[in-house]
Length: 118
Image (cartoon, rainbow, N blue to C red; front, side, top):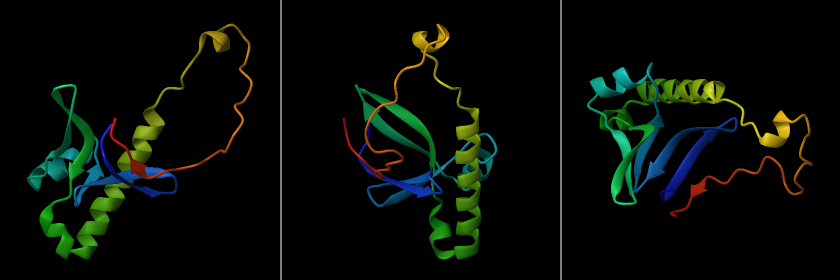
């Protein structure tokens, strides 16, 4: 998707780093606060078009304001939790028919924070 690093807390990605800039997870509750700080959404190019993700650039002034930085980070973590709670479970044709697929073999709960370009 894009090259960068994910920032996780308790298994929840709430920020990403791209080219030395930090972007915070955002939603309808946090975007107004970020927009008021002249922040902008994270954009990347794919297949000849720009795509915006639900991450917004950390306002520059917060690098020198530790308490406010932490408040924005907590807001981003809350947005990540809300986003995870809003995801609908994936259904499959097999699941609808009343049968279940066998579990996949291999490691569980493995998290790699480095994203790789496609």
